Image (cartoon, rainbow, N blue to C red; front, side, top):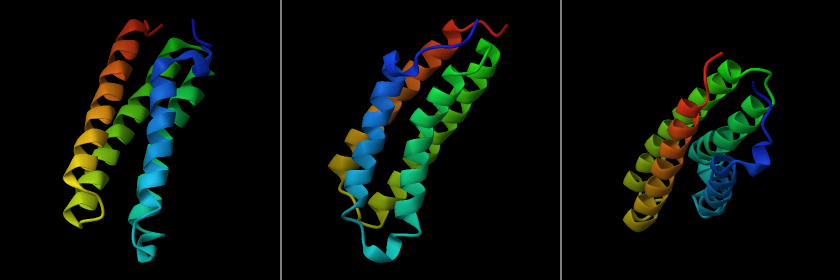
Length: 120
């Protein structure tokens, strides 16, 4: 049965921290990217914890799993946008590697949690 307290979930805690980091990093991007890459990076980073919290409030685990799938997709989208940010010299290789490592850890945690939920 569904209905989880999302604030207690490690996947939510780590992904909200990741979104905060993305906001801080993108504040140093060129101003002309405000409505482009900055907006995209921020929106998909916020999508990860937002979909976890939305899914946690759903009545069934099957519904929760659907929102976890969206969170995993947002993790992949975030990695793509960070790669582009690196290629455009907006972030360093070190920053890219650290963020990608954290995204991968969160992704793995989401998969483990996803698999622990029965799909009833």
